[in-house]
Image 1 (spheres, one colour):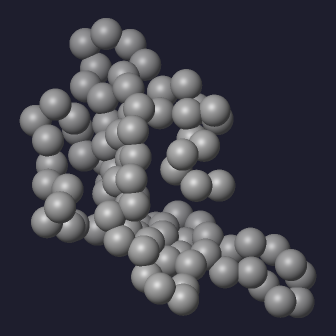
Image 2: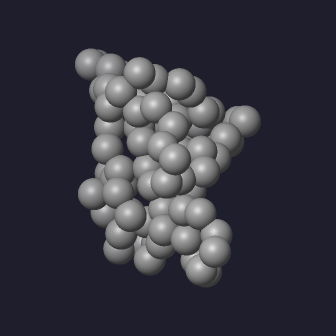
Length: 88
């Protein structure tokens, strides 16, 4: 799913965008921000690289994600920058 569908899945999803898509590949650098679930807790945001591919033998979609830095999305004082070590 693209970021434009996340608000249908997660009610805390606030905004997101792809900062860079790599042509010919299913890779991107993306930014996502989430609302706080309770008062007095800062909202969170993520800046991450994501790669996707389909395993040709099983048909499964393989997704790998890790946090990155990018000059177009510096940390904001209004959010706590969450860190994804490795996910997939």
